[in-house]
Image 1 (spheres, rainbow, N blue to C red):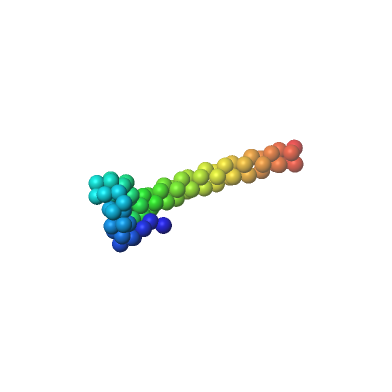
Image 2 (cartoon, rainbow, N blue to C red):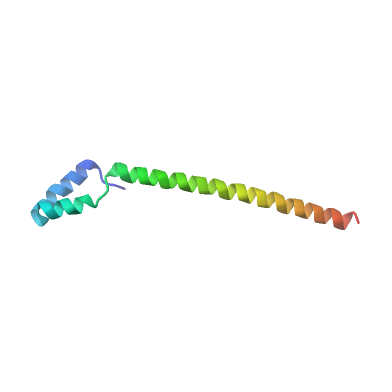
Length: 80
C-alpha cells in the first residue's frame, strides 16, 4: 500500500538529519505520490480487463467451432 502524504512528509523530515536536504529531496523525488500510484494501477487493471474480455471472446469462438465440428462428425458417423 502506498504511503499517505502525511507519512511521506514525516519520512522527509526524518531523513533530513541523516542525509541532508539535497539527498533527501533526491530520494523523495523517486518515490511516487500515492495518487500517481493509484492511477497507474487503475490503468493496469483496465488493460487486464480488456485482455480478459478478448480471451473470453476467443475462447467462446473456439468452443463453438469445436462443438460444431463434433456435431458434424457425429452426424457423418451416425447418419451414414
